[in-house]
Amino acid sequence: MRFLGNVLAVIVGLLVFSVLSFFILAGIIAIASSSDSEVKIKENTVLVLNLDGRNIVERTSDDDFNISSIPGFSAVSNVGLLNLKKAIKTAAENENVKGIYLKAGMVFAGQAMLQELREELISFKESGKFIVSYSEIYSESGYFLSSAADEIYLNPLGGMEFNGFSSEIVFFKGLFEKLEVEPVIFRVGEFKSAVEPFLLDKMSDENRLQTSVFLNDLNDFAISKISESRSLPYEKVQEINSQMLIRKNADALELKMVDGLWYEDQVKDLLREKLGIEEDDDINSINVTTINKSAKSKNKLSKNKIAVIIAQGDIVSGSGEGVIASESFVKEVNKAKKDENVKAIVIRVNSPGGSALASEVMWRALSEAKKVKPVIASMGEYAASGGYYISAPADTIVAQPNTITGSIGIFGLWFNAEGFMKNKLGLTTDVVKTGELSDFLSFSRKLTDLEKSIYQSNVEEGYDTFISRVSEGRNMTKEEVLEVASGRVWSGIQAKENGLVDVLGNLEDAIEIAAKKVGVEDDYRIVYLPQEKSFFERLMADLTNDVQTRYMRHKLGSFYPVYSEIEKIKKYEGLMLRMPYDIIVE
Image (cartoon, rainbow, N blue to C red; front, top):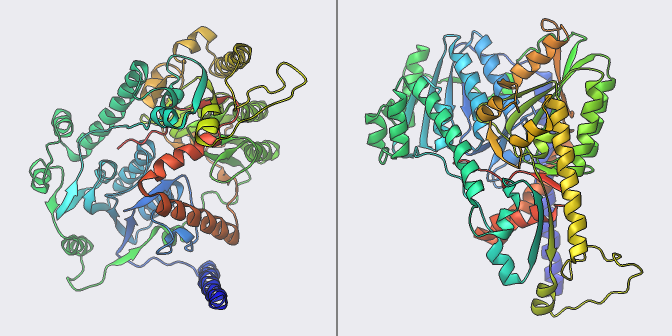
């Protein structure tokens, strides 16, 4: 049996290796062939934006081969916001592209990212070309994006969610009580609710207030944009939304939120009609990757460069993937600072925050860069806590109206696991030490009053530093900053009103501001940092991460979200500048 088991293991290993080798070879062939051939767009072409079930991130690779696109390897594939906007711009400028077929009913993205993409779609319509949207199911976010289309169609037996936003928090108090683990929290600011899930079993009044205010801001903004695009009174759309008047598909049609309850073949017949082709003719279509290969870079030969540094994810020290790592970030900032051809720096921040130390390290690098050339901050979905900290040195801060920002506060987190170790695991500890505080912050016992006072003092000092950084960067007094701090979260609209943001706009607006500051608005090119990884680096990283994620999802089932949150907690080191929780607006 052992022999048969070994043989089976070898066979399985060879099979896995063969499959991987096939995809690697296919990727190499695809990349090689695509790079050598010039993309020619046929007459009467439609750009297909199929975003159903896809997750929008800041950017993805420009090539076709991506592990997330292989069936069976990933439940949700990523598509880059920058890639999508480039494709839409290219389609608007190419006379052979007549319109866009949008399928984005179940897209996964935050409100600010959707707004940025929505703005690009509306600009596309100004070229006189059409946008037709179709989906079997429209989520709240999917409909918000799709409402930019000229015509919206819904499957007769599909569904549509349009009932306002909600934000739900997972609280760990009961879990820690069962495990006999005592969380000890140090914080400054009445709104610094990042620690609430460890202490409470429901929202505090302060947290409920701030969440309600910015959530209503985001919802009202979405309603106003949908009202404008659908030519419906704001009050009517608000009523539909607040009372969930779309309870069956016929309601969506009757209330004029969609233009028809059609099957996809009927929508394709409409596309043929708009293209002026026969009923049985094939529709010439092109996807995002292919059309982007036909795009011509603006001022490609210009020596003047605007460097856009992408900062997406949690803020951590050192280096790492899928996060804003201080060591890697500083390296890119210094590279842009030293490059004489880089005239200005734009940091694109999409972060809930993280390590206070890492934030300070990045703040220092940007402050030094600012002495040499302009630094502009563009806020994406959120730029809160540490995300705001690293934005503070910027000459100008640009955010979307529905960006989530602020959360200027600080906290420290420590766990006393004595009860868990002794009563659950049967473990005890003993210690020999040379000084009173040699075992400072030991997890196997309660903290002493002295330890608590030392840690709290560090938290308060860190908060004062944070306030000073914002005060200096925003040209506000510390008293003025304190009025909008205390860990409170704001929408972009509110942040503009209270002085935390200068301009409401998108990444392009931030880039234009940077170019104007150095007088190169008519002669510059954009370089994005960090540079894209090689094909093999991306393949192996994607494969490793996706296999691990899929395994844990399968193993834990409905408990995976809790596991995911605990994994994040394990990364919390030192003082933290972070949002109250990961906000998912749906």
